[in-house]
Length: 378
Image (tube, rainbow, N blue to C red):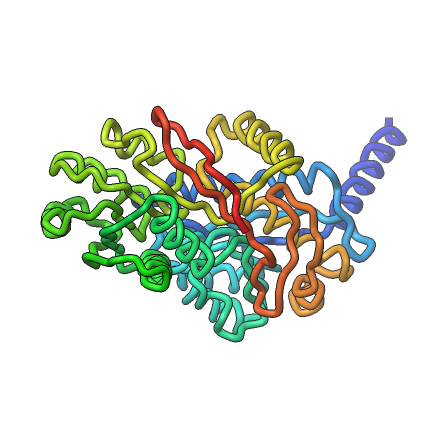
């Protein structure tokens, strides 16, 4: 009996010792889990959770030690002040890296905190050019920026939509104003006529005054720089005023949720939007497989950027494996040299600023309440 107890105790100790040898690596994720765009923040967080679960199931070894990854998820409510508080919290918890934030308005101020701490940050969705142009060596992103996105949409509005009178509205956030500025530049460069520039904010619900002003200028294209939570009600109010202009926007409105938010105000082919990122050809198969696994795991459809979060986290871990260390100072050089990484969303390589090289954009419209792909452009 005593021998049996001794054997059980010995086995327990061995198991504990084996578990103790596992190295725990903390990775932070930040997005808006509360507020108007909580559905997008949750989508991003789910992408991070799926990546961590897959890595732990696969078993990853770094520097000869088996690793258990732990996701530390924080909510920034798409608010810059809350974003910096969340960033400091992750630094204090000694995370090895951060995937996030979702918004440019939170990613930019948070990036200084991560830079000061020497912690790598990969945003899966912040598109404002300033984010990677501050000179920080810790800052990366896996999607094309607003120069590419806004510029592409501006040219599309003139050439393909034949816009003769173009109006612009933005929500005054770093993202909304930034992408609207780039759209306006492209319209002017292409010889287009801008008939009005108005602004709102990201928590507004009444757009009647600015839409009434624009209606008098008879626009045939209205560009909105902002998110789907504002775009949906804006489309409803456009319809009530009888404004039949094409509604153009960036990735913030280019979500599966827009159809629910706009309801019957979403006319077939009325909306044209661009999502930073895009897959075509053989790559489409891996994205479809990801979407199916995501749906099975979370009982929810991918809203927008979950696949990019998934890739961002995996790229970060790939750099840790290559450098045999989860110490930010040691794996950061390997992360900066990332080249040819085959992800769900395509091949990822970083340039000297930390921007993804040859970033794709996907143009969409909506038909019968569903997103319908127009084209992938680079």
